[in-house]
Image (cartoon, rainbow, N blue to C red; front, side):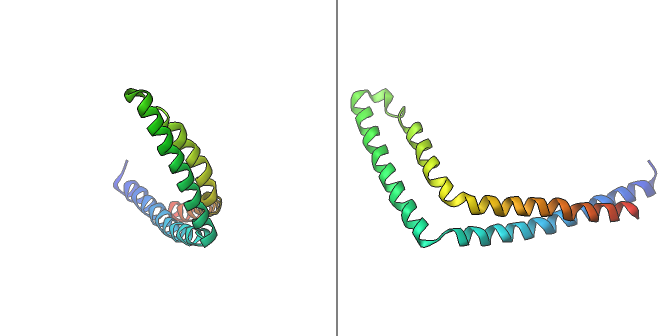
Length: 121
């Protein structure tokens, strides 16, 4: 590979990197805005109530398991934590996931013209 070909390849890679970096910054800003908008007071209160409820149940099941067998104290924790995640995550993720999907599709569309323009040089 000649020096000129290597320089063209590096210039092309730099152009793709710049386009991707700019799109990442825009996507991150959009994600932050969507995340802030998703945290409404009602959702925060509901998440607090649910986490308190499940946390209390988790502590009670851990205490009952510890009294039954000291070795089995950690066994019921994982299913309870998974149930807690199932309840709490959908409260916050729909808006964040849609913002991420919109940013990812826009990133793919923006990166292609920049890469094509860099390859044309």
